[in-house]
Length: 233
Image (tube, rainbow, N blue to C red; front, side, top):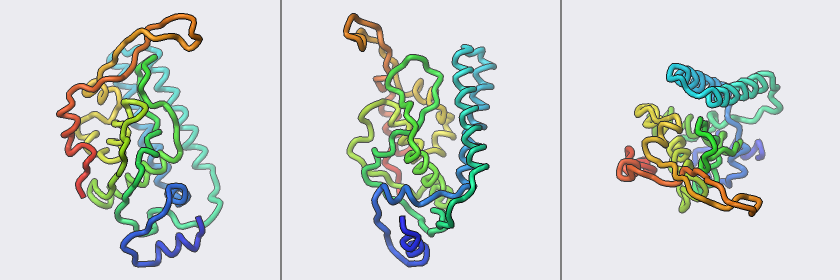
């Protein structure tokens, strides 16, 4: 991403600026927002861990969440210690007030914190692209009273059931928090079922019972979940 191009966006009076995904990702989000996001995730995980301890949750699940939390602390410290390499304008400084994202399924690989064990169908991949998009959406929703973002995709769900939760996290974080469904396990208990079935093991030498998060329930409610993915302008 050329600094001249970024400067034109900031200084110009454009109705719209159209750029590719790869170039959009090169526009940095401010270091302060990155630190704030990591701190918020740490606070959220701290609350989840406390809740699990009060409910006498299984020790392996609590330990899993503690590992997540420690990894976030490591990332936060690395970010604090990092020296800024250039003087590029940040996304917040460009004057962008609305974001239309085509082919939005490219950002579905956001990490989903869950204490579920050995259950397939829950996104566990980590994507810097998805994290960057999440922070940019968060910024625009802050300045536009929970609006300011539109996603367009023909495949909002393709690999895992948790992708719908990820999409709602981008577009409806305020609603998820209001309904106390911002922790995936609570969302999954409200809108999903875990189904166990017999399947051939990876070695092809026998069979095994595999549990998958693979069935929705309360479909009318999830489709009308404050407009669902049809976020109004």
